[in-house]
Length: 266
Image (cartoon, rainbow, N blue to C red; front, side, top):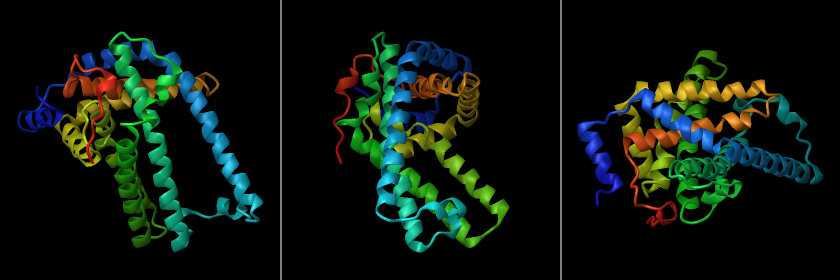
């Protein structure tokens, strides 16, 4: 049986076809089956995240620390210790959030197979064998992005143009690594393999993938019309698009059950 790595090697040498219309239609059909459960899961996730954030802030303040000054300083003004704390906190938060996004993508795959999905499926990737590789992948990508941004800020302090350059580089990194999560949860790849595979896949069809993501983002933003909470029910279109791009590029083995994925070796 052809492995995901074999398929990626094939794509690397021969390329692949990705039709915009078919891919988006597939994504939208999947989205319609997952929007409700994914939206409810997003609301629950945000409630828990805010509760933890405020809880952590309360603990910090009760320890006698005045954090009001944080609102008046920028990242560029942080001390070395402050920068280290900022980098570590950002990477950990990214790592903890990545399995949730992965779970929503996995829900799209389950729905595409005709299976019923529930809110509980939105947290499936917080357990083995998914959590560790997803956490590590997010750590690598976020650390690399923050490292570049920090280096630019230190080399060109208070330079607005270079700040925009740093932001552009971060967006580019996010763009080229967009397929890393699907490659981990569906392709059984290790974090570095998934990142490398994602970069290759995106550069083979950059304009089609960019167009799909752009349309998805516009659709997701429409949720703000519904008193903002509606965005929780439009954001899942992005996860459906990630899944559809993977399905129509790398492909998913029909015989492989989702719960069989994950004999990852570190």
